[in-house]
Length: 364
Image (spheres, helix red, strand yellow):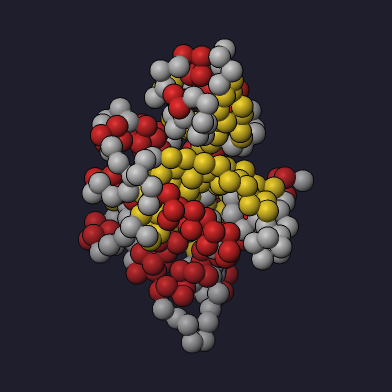
């Protein structure tokens, strides 16, 4: 979820100009979701996507123009996804562009909004990130950043009226079910600004536990790390984690007994069991069935393996209702595409389809 911060911090450390592109609002059918981001620097995307196609092409063209300016700027642009962009989605998106082309000192300190947001993500805190949009009437209202986490409020603005206005609206947004939103501010002198309020609800991220750090799990991580989930990666072999060359900043790595650690996992966890041992597979699944606090329990293997495990669970008189929640095999067996990456893709699709189906039922 927070990979954009890693790339953003890299650009800041190298003093490279960059543009942060964020989807602030969507309506109707769109190829992206609110909160999707791109970090664009040196005429290339170093992180993210907002759905590709002509929408992304137009957005990157705007970002390129902003990088060529001498001053930091921001703007909010609405894109109808119809004939204008040659896309048939039919909805629209509002995109926030923020360029940073110089004066990086304010972004590097421990008290900068960048570092505060990083800490909030690490601590799984819910928060509001607010940005004031360029306004020609009063530059002091422009390009300001605000952060609210429970009773902790940060403001880069010297305008107390603006800060209090943003704080009040951020508190309300944090406490209700509404997503990101736009509000209009006008001070006593008549100067105004549009405020983008981006809501980040880390506490609602779905917990996903991967048991096993072998070649398939290592191929799975780069896929799962980009999903709105909280990852727990569990194995009792440190050397297997050492073989992974990808980003682990968003993964809680647990090198411990895989069976015992099940007691410490969050409720309603989604489990993928991909260990090196059939016995460990069984013991992990058995422990999860006894606890019965999972949303999904999937194990790699064959149909024969799955049926044998189910028979053993039944012989132990475990609840048949809970046993029926156990899924094996996970992923789809292909005749030609048998690489760890191919297998990982099908396992990820199984998990995503299950979550999507569950979310749709909950939304009814």
